[in-house]
Image 1 (cartoon, rainbow, N blue to C red):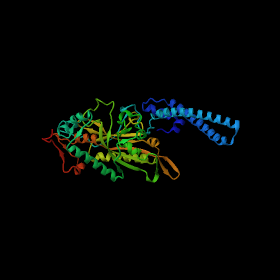
Image 2 (image 1 turned 120 degrees about the vertical axis):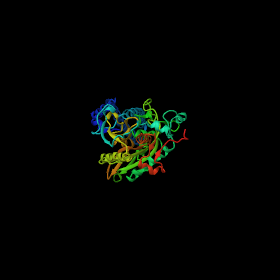
Image 3 (image 1 turned 30 degrees about the vertical axis):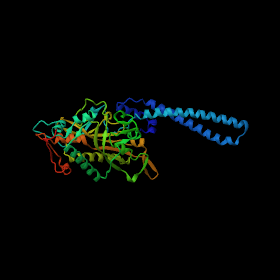
Image 4 (image 1 turned 90 degrees about the vertical axis):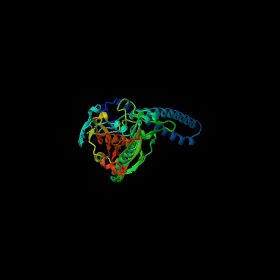
Length: 424
């Protein structure tokens, strides 16, 4: 949620942001709704004061004077009911309208209408060289008996997969490797609930903008999470945090669910854009004065994880037209995939300033000072996409896959994935 006081004083700031993000939001409607709402609240408060005063006076009155005051009380009640109903209607429109406003982007976020405006900031490592034509992760996975799409489709439909054999061990090796790094850096590990209330989805900024992307359990009115950012962010909802405890750093492993509506025909196959995937997430509640410093540390932690896997990647500073509504700034880490001959997003790292904290009412207390905290999040390991990167970068000419050195201690002695003659 945006800062309404700032909006009232400087609506042009938000008009500029809306334009930079190529959104269509009429700020005049917002100003009018805010004005009407505040006027109604003022009138309702005045009527309630008159009603309270009358209720104190009436017992001491008699005769005609008392009857006149009672009639006046009835009129106040009627007017109050009408205004309260009108206010409820205006508040619904108010919430719907202002829920569509994005956060204010940081000055270092490039202005651009879409992904073409993203700026490559840095590279790590070099593209691997092969003396053979590298295979895609799908071909490798199927041939090695570690990926089964056909049986998953038979059971669940398209965009679902079975991981098999060494791929299962490799997933949990990745998770242990990542959690080891994060716990050493002071992140508190959590296993969060996968079903959350709508208030959590709204509070983190995914609703109403991306509501069509998420699965809902109709009977319970709960939503399956698309990232553990949601329960991690809502974890301290409606709480005051001690300023001396900041930053609070959490990490969570979870299975995630997304409809991927509107992406059919795009990256269809294998582990790309599946409806169900596993992920390790990082989340930080930070003091506003130190949050940008913490954000760069967060990105550094992400890079440390990927560098340990010895994958070639680039860091991309995402433009205003390609970041999420809650984001003030966002980096994408894109790994080189030899089988696709292109860079693909492996992880994202976002700073949301006080946008989520305002919606979820998360503040810090520093003496008498009470202010909103800043929140930020980053992928630590999107398991499916990281597996893709490992398969394609660690393949050999025989179609086998070597296990990255840092993961071998978790693989029970397995150093290479090769074809099983018995597997079908």
